[in-house]
Length: 156
Picture 1 (cartoon, rainbow, N blue to C red):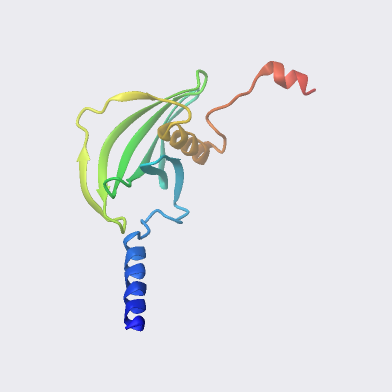
Picture 2 (picture 1 turned 30 degrees about the horizontal axis):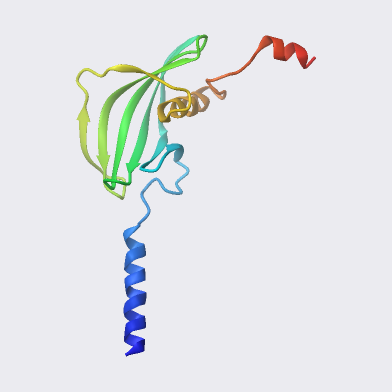
């Protein structure tokens, strides 16, 4: 009787652990985490990054940001345009389409935004972090800089 109870308990623990299965972006170098909180984790798909405009100090880069929502157990990808103004250190984001994925990374549904809005992105937000990673991927330097001429002269 004790063996059967122990076996049943082991089976329950095993089944419970498999319910918390890994998503397709977990431990995959293709996806770099750009944010997380109590309900979500967000990643940028490094293979989706593509420069659209190179006209310093203005740049546009397209990339996909994926967010997993633990409250709904859904993975959603947002195809975004990031608009950069290097001089003013401002990034704006425009979401072109939204795609939902299954736990294997297969797209289930895509909705194209017919009139996508352009909104400001804070530096340390998910989109701000994603934009910085995308910029670094394209130009081998971070977008956000804190270069200060006075501090540079002090170091001489």
